[in-house]
Length: 88
Image (tube, rainbow, N blue to C red):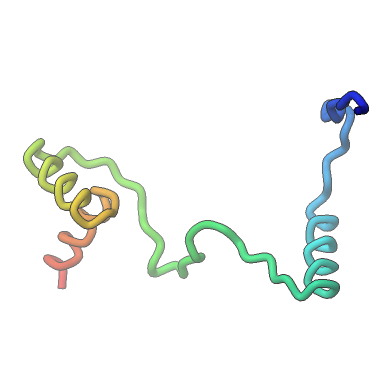
């Protein structure tokens, strides 16, 4: 059995964004496979969240974390949804 040799990544060149796009298009044309982007869908300007820093009472954080665990989401999502309900 031949000895496995590690690829010399230190000497590999970087692939340009154009080459990545060309490869994705070639895969789609040859195999009909669409490369889907990972992560969250892109939001429009009115839906983008704004990063803020806020001090909350520890009871509020504990409540949000317990609700988040029940629902299987993040605690910041729970706080955001509660505030959105109050604003409408």
